[in-house]
Amino acid sequence: MNSAHTPALPKLSAYTTLRLGGPANRFVSAVTSEDLVAAVREADAAGEPVLLLGGGSNLVVADAGFDGTLVAVANTGWRRDGAVVEVEAGQNWDAFVAALVEAGLGGLECLSGIPGSVGATPIQNVGAYGCEVAESIVSLELYDRGTREVRTLKADDLGFAYRTSVLKGTDTGVVLSVRFEIREDGLSAPIRYAELARTLGVEIGARVPAAAAREAVLELRRGKGMVLDPADHDTWSAGSFFTNPIVPAAEAEAVLKRIAGSVGTDVPQYPADGGVKLSAAWLIERAGFAKGYPGPGNRVSLSTKHTLALTNRGDATTEDLLALAREVRDGVYARFGVRLHPEPLLINCVI
Image 1 (cartoon, rainbow, N blue to C red):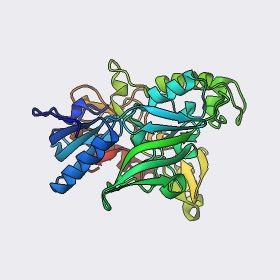
Image 2 (cartoon, rainbow, N blue to C red):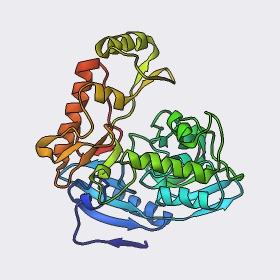
Image 3 (cartoon, rainbow, N blue to C red):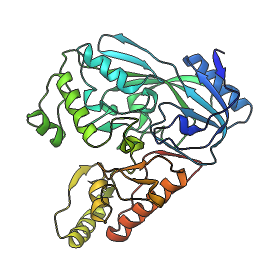
């Protein structure tokens, strides 16, 4: 197996965008799909827990670390066959999107600036600015730890929904590569997000040059501290910490009335499968948590640019972050009766 073992283990804080997390028992870097399968098989055979590490942008790891094998998914590159591109799971997502745009190819530009690796995108159906990967994914290659076989799953097999798929919440499948359908005319996917449309000066549903859409998205994300910058502690985060809550249709009228009665204004709402989607950031702000709201010892805080990001101000612990997350979650529930749920994967910890 072409992999490297590191005897002196650094903490996982060195591998996560939050810069938090204790050590793992063992570290393996898998630079090919074959390495990745072999590393997971070896750990499974030894009865060791496995944590797959891509870009580390969606992980909250306990201060105690991870009692098992950390497998760094480091297989990179992609192959194009007409309008379909197959991308290795360890490929940096934004570098891939940037290369597509530079080559005059469209379809994924509204997902520019999102940190992390390609293999993580189907697991939680990554999305932003009116687009999500479910719209472009054709299929993926996956190692099934139960059958010990490599399988091909088509998009219809993945059970995509808002920020989730059949792969989320389970570690039985290891994504090896993902196939995306792209647009060969160099134009973007239809612009559906109002803020992005205003920035571009176009109507909802318009298509624009992919490069223009990418630059507009990056501009918007930078303004919210959502483009990684080591010098900016607002980007020392896991991105959006809470998903936008979806209220079941049967409860929506009562919930919206209760919230409106509490804040004295109309409540932003969006159609969603089975109900109504609310804005987590809007709820957080109106529950009394402003941008920059501090957590324990000012070591963590809400981002000064966007209330949906919880940030490490430089010397935080994971428990500091979780304490702030609990305070925000409980505060929103106490004010509005709406429960927020974390978007990142929590490793050896809970809120």
